[in-house]
Image (cartoon, rainbow, N blue to C red; front, side, top):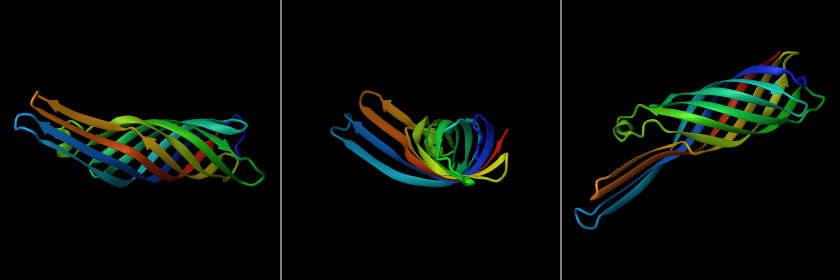
Length: 187
């Protein structure tokens, strides 16, 4: 397994399921009493790639990461993260881990309606837990398999109020799930 105080660089490829919703409300005092409100939930299943650099310590590892979510349904994103994993060291070549992760995401939507309402660039923080296994392939290489569950406050809003008409639209991610396969090199 990993040497204490060893630096590593890694890459991962995986899938992710993004769960979000769009909500809207509108009211108008010009036409008398009028109020409309609604929301819709959606889920996007896509893939991503990530690079990470970190350092092993006696009981765990810390690493920073940079990920790109591949374009799906006109949406793509970049994520910058920081994570800590506790390693359950043992005598075998397989080491389980459990960790915490936090990240910041910037997204871009090519949807014409999102662009029209200026809600085409949501951004925000994500935080959650991760778990998986590291398999030592040799003295310097490791295969990693894992999953993450993250809560998200990535969102973008549109507001319009001219005194008689008020419109509010919000697009937001609520949480997402990642599952991945990675390869790490220790030096």
